[in-house]
Image (cartoon, rainbow, N blue to C red; front, side, top):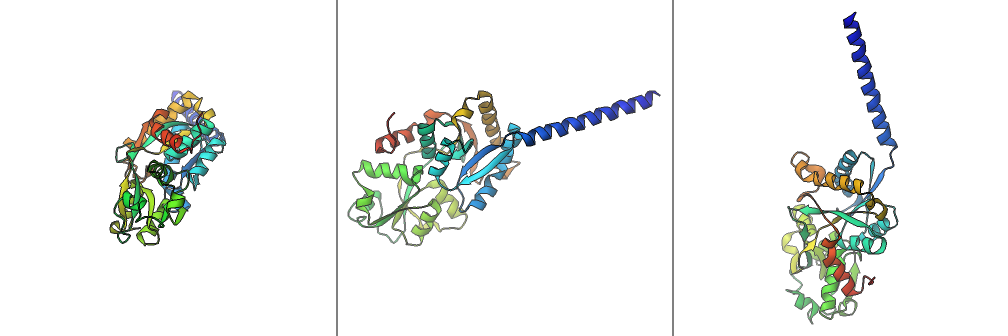
Length: 300
């Protein structure tokens, strides 16, 4: 009799646990999905989605809510998406973040680490046959009338920082160069290496990745200018979501956990990215200052 009773109690406990699990799963499925916007870091949208899907799944697990990943193909577009409330969380370039913060109150919560560091560098590259050996050559008589490519206007290294550098030297790129293009970082490196562009703006992480992947040859991409250190890409949340301090803490903890997990789960981040560090708006002051100096950011 006692044995039958124990079996009944065990069966009821197992049933309750199963129902509890079902309930938790149902609650998870019915929770409002968080929209996670990611810039186009990879050569195409499909590869970009595949690269950042493991991170989205990690966040969903840690936050207890579904996370919808969406690639936005321009930094400017991602900033506008975050500002409009179409994106809840964004992994975005520094200038895109500053725009979203300035225009709509979006707030950074963490900064991504590259080889253990929270910083990177803007570059200007040319090809070895251009005859250009320095930024002085590019902005002097040797560079007059050449063609030059920026990234999109929401890019830090592809637009804001080189534009600021030109402006500080009294150069209007639209007047100095024969042709100015606005395109993607990968296209800039590819076209410079092929000799189709005289020079263009890029950043060290992209150039290194393209060389490592065999997309360009190192000897065909010649760096003639490197910026001061710039803060890495930001993980930012829209203004209303930032007011939920408990959520922000959970998100920061989830991101901080990525670094230690990478040894066992190498696909959580692309190669050379090593985790996240908790961050705040003050880290992005150099970007904000450049935006104000160039007039691309209106004073408040």
